[in-house]
Length: 194
Length: 194
DNA sequence: CGAAACATACATTCATCATGTATGTAAACG
DNA sequence: CGTTTACATACATGATGAATGTATGTTTCG
Image (cartoon, rainbow over all chains, first blue to last red; front, side):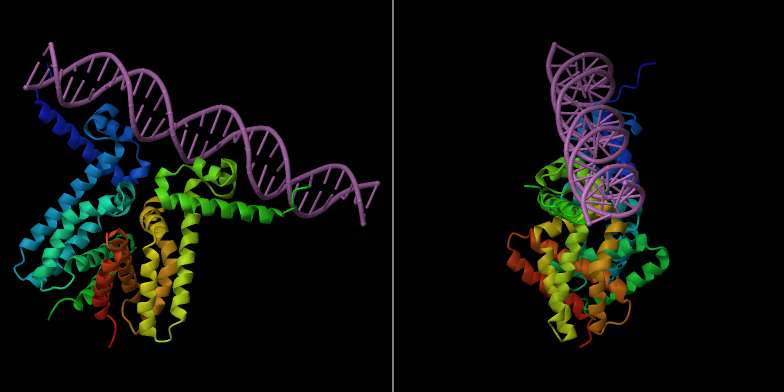
């Protein structure tokens, strides 16, 4: 029988999704440097032609994977934030949610370890800032912080990410999580009024 | 005349220093992925044989470069710390010194961007912890912090590194530096007694 | 028919390994 | 004590395989 007559847009969309999905899995498992472009396209049931047609190459595909991942994380944090009316509690809730997300191995590997080296610090930060950082800035302001908020947001975010990395690599994650949350709270205590 | 009769140890030492020095320069300029092993050995006046004899390969040479750099940074911070008798002031002084060091482009590129991706997070952290982190833990304890000190040290260190990166990539570093130091102080205020 | 989507074949770069050569070191021997 | 012999260390060179990127062909849709 003839193949189903999909539109060009559908074909493209499906191929790109495939590449991003497969890339995400493999990059998360073994890291950017240890996954070949051949392996990705093979696992996606495609060839190099498709990859170089839609993206400029392996690096651009990685950027797409990273942006896709970030968008997903932001959406989850925003959803968690929206459910809490108290702004100060919302901040802590959002950080807790983000902590959980950053503990996932794929997030650690792709977003926190490989992305800055592969894409360069500036591009990495540009993508990160466009996504998660904006949410944190809003949350800090809503919680009553007024001075140096953008800078503070970055420092807090890096401490949160560090905490997530600590938890992710600790032999007893539950214990590490408790300790990290105490330490984070102690740090934030100096900022929040009340 | 006969070549100067150097001992094997001297020859090795000289070669390794050369490789590490050249590697550090090139890695700092263009990043690990964009420097070939051939280029390094050529610039060092050697061949691949030397590299593979002394180090396992490009990656191991990078590790050596990174450790060398870290040792240098730690020594400078310790020197700065020793000059200040007041323990609480010493902490701030040490952080300031570290902030300056982390603003150097070679430190940003090698120690903060490439190292975690090339060596893996665990090995990167092991080296970092063995060097600078120990100093920070001691300084925090000496300044009066008692609870969760190792964890807090990591969070603080990540915030400091973040501040350094912010400064390094800001169009007006002086302004960024002032703002980052205010923000850091605000964070630390919650920890330090008095 | 023309353009977009994808496949295939080829060129190039690069890390690594296997092997060869020279230099230094130390022990055996006279 | 000097020399030779045996060995280890330091380095060079050529081959190999893997991986990326490019150029060109083929199919599918509008």
